[in-house]
Amino acid sequence: MHTTSYWLTIPRELMTALYRQRFVNGRFPAEALRQAALDILAARRARGDSLHPFYWAPFIVLERGHG
Image (cartoon, rainbow, N blue to C red; front, side, top):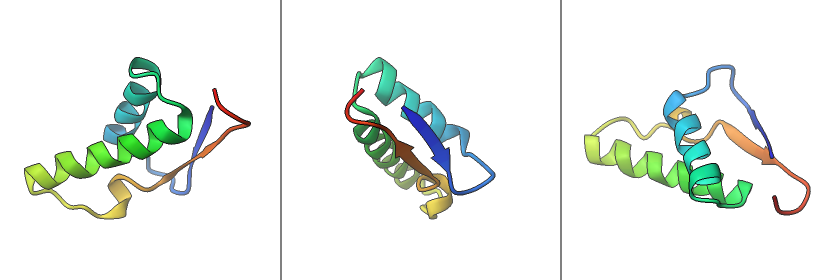
């Protein structure tokens, strides 16, 4: 899995959630990224924090098939 960002600043919260979903929960890369973004949105909404895409949308997954 290769993950890249559209932005220079990478939110640590999203990277942590991404790697948790990928390596702890065993999700395929694109699924892990999607779930990580949903987790971030839910956590930020619950705290009353900004839901701006900066916090959840900077990444794309580049992969060849599953794995």
